[in-house]
Structure formats: C-alpha cells, structure tokens
Length: 323
Image (cartoon, rainbow, N blue to C red):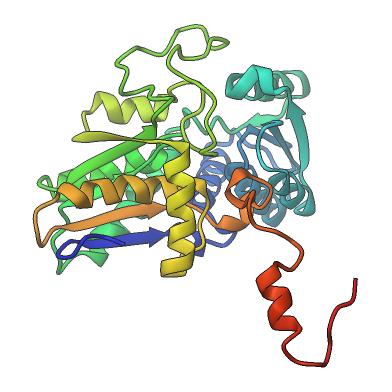
C-alpha cells in the first residue's frame, strides 16, 4: 500500500488479550489503584468509555474480582456493549446529544453517589506511564537495528501518544512523531484551548465516525503531550478516508482493524507519499475490526449471499440453500 521505496510498518495492538491497545491502560490503572490503596478489595470500578477501554476494564476487573460499570454514549457500536456485558459488566448508555462529556459526567456522578472507584482514564498518569514502560520500549526494541523516521498515531485519551512519545523522542530525537485527528474534529490543530468548564465541548469538535479517537474535549493526558511538544506534525484524516483504508488493509494486507486503525494508517500513507526514498514509517493499529460490525465500516457488507456467491453455489449440484 505504501509507495515504492518507503517502508511502512504497523504495530498491531489487537494482539493484546482482548484485542486493543486499551488492555494496557486497563491493567495499568487498576494495578495503580491497588498499589496506592485508592481501589479497595471488591470495590466497584466505573469508567466512561467509547468501548475499548470499557472492554479492557471489564476483562481486568473480572480477573481480579471487581464489579465494573461502564458509561457509554449511545452512538458507539452495540457489539461493544455485548462484549462488556458478556464479561459481567454493567453498561449505562447515555444520550448521544450529550456526547463524550455526558458519559464522563455520568461516570463521575455514579462514583460520587455510590462510592465507586473512578479510573479517570483521560487524566490518570498511570495511563501514559504504562505506555512509557511498555509500548515505547517495545517499539525501540523492534527498531533497534533499523531506522525509524516517522511514528504515526492518533489519540483517544492520549496515553499512547504521550507515554510512548516521550520514550521515543528521548531515545531517538530524530524520529518525527506524527499525530492525527479527524479532519472535522481537529481539536489540537485548532490551537483553541479546551474550555475550563468540564460540561462544555471543545468548539472545534463535530461528530465523526472514528470511534475511540478524539472525544469532544482534549483529555489532560493528551494535552500533556501537546504541552511537551512531542509531535512534529498533525495530519487530518476524514471519516471516509479512515473507512476506505481500513477496508484496504483487510483486503490487501490481511490486517483486520477498525475505523481508528484505518485512520492511523491513512495518516501514515500520507506521510509515505512525501517521505524521502528509504524512509521507515511506523503506524499504530489500536484494535480489531470485530468491534465495528454494526458501524459504517461494514454498512455495505451483506449477511446473505451475493449474486456472485449464489452463482458459485449453483455451480455444483449438492448442498444448495433453497430460499
């Protein structure tokens, strides 16, 4: 998919236990809560999530014996709710009109009302710290004998960007870090600060289909990376580009990822187009396409046999499905 002469690599985070980069975050913030004593034995854990963090927390909480409640806006794919509930979690769905800020405020309310442990993924320092201990060093190890000219990532909480970004920049200052965000929700690119009122959305945010990327506010963890000037460039990606590249990754490379993975790869391909010959580019693939079966990514993928498939079925006499 990359132009000739440019080497594009993808770090497939769907090889984590429950198939997303957020498995790292979940383990980090639960173990941090245990270590500090903030999380008590058997205490209910609550968090707001577009799905992947919720699934990861449901997994970790199930393994460690904590009840888990996730608040999630109704716009996110329904299979995420089912996976969490299958892991024993409770899912509280919030109105789409309230966007990401609504589900975050609901999680805070529930924590205060019931004495639950709020993991605060968007501001918890254990989030980027774990990426600094794991994701960043993994990348440096994998590219120890290779150049690494560009590292491309999107952001949800900003944990990967800030945590791994610090380590990469410190060890390989010549590596250019490329941050990407939705073209119609370019919060960081706008240079407009996040409003102080936690109930207020960022003025540059608009609805976009890249689930897990760029909520309607700039998370504190992401802002830390911005303040440290970790990124060298921001590349906007449209929802249409993200979906198209995700499909292309599946059909041409066998990489089955979601819309956010397609978005990151789309940004990386834009970098590849202008990178000098011989450049090495690495992009993050945060999760699996199985989280998006009810999303626009699969809107044109049918359940019933197509005409071409029916023709193949009819080409031999046995085991024909008659409707």
